[in-house]
Length: 400
Image 1 (cartoon, one colour):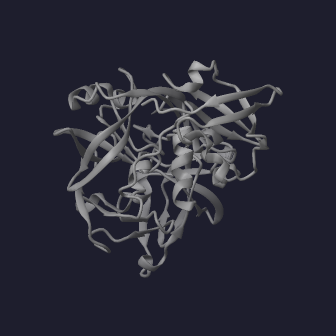
Image 2 (cartoon, rainbow, N blue to C red):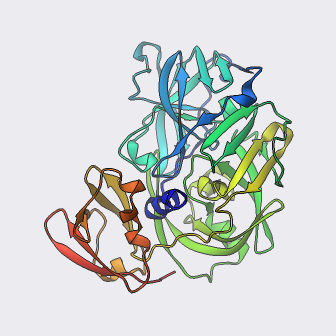
């Protein structure tokens, strides 16, 4: 069940985090000075995947333990305004950044030391913004999004299969695999690469470990790829500035450098969406990257992908048409997918489910087999008890 758990939750929630083009700090060297310990390669950092499919781990900021999400789509690391480590007396407000859903208000907080595994950064600072729990797909918020300003000068080795990562000197090649170009853009200051879809090169693509989905394209990039005729539905994402609805389809094949992947889930933003706003073709998220062991080394100009045990598995598809988020003892419907059985049955955003086939929602819903109900075999009848006491039956079907 471990290998299925997180793709299932991704299928249900499609949570995404991205903050790019953050404002420059008010003064001083924003990135600080980063060093690696002599034994950095031995200092693996364990992580789990949030219900929204992001890499969540423990680190230290000014010697205080905090929780964080590894987010290469963030230009300047972001500390939660509500975190206990925020000192209001040292916080400079008045900034603004572009995020999924719109603009968000930011501040700036100078920092002393940041420690992640064998990496230590001294000086510099972090952006400060509201980081709602919803952005991780669960009920528990994190303290920080760790972005390009902290990780970009090193090679980042992410071992999804064993739920661990490490920061090692640039230029190292700890494993072999397919390669793809990788750089940190001068304009957006985030990790970027390129994709080939239906023989068409799409670039730049933000490589975004903080985005829980697989591949996201702008409307223009989707048209260039010539795949508009594919069966599709709708889905929803949650960024720092709120929700965004996009089209969802399954692309027959996608190439990232020399790595070919088949049956890849693709979200397509509407015209004027986030990718268009920041001037990129789209994003490559954790939903795609977690099929592989991944080395991100922008200073060496490369990404390395070694297929993992789930690399050839087809994406899980909703057969219910309901995308839900996890709340204490219940599920909240965030989106009713276009053309699905839930839409035909009259479900609405905001409906809350308290029982599935007569059973209450378990505390560990994300890791419980009960969570597979929404992707069950077509023709299966699921009984869903609303928190109002109403009971509805839903017949599952393939619809995209």
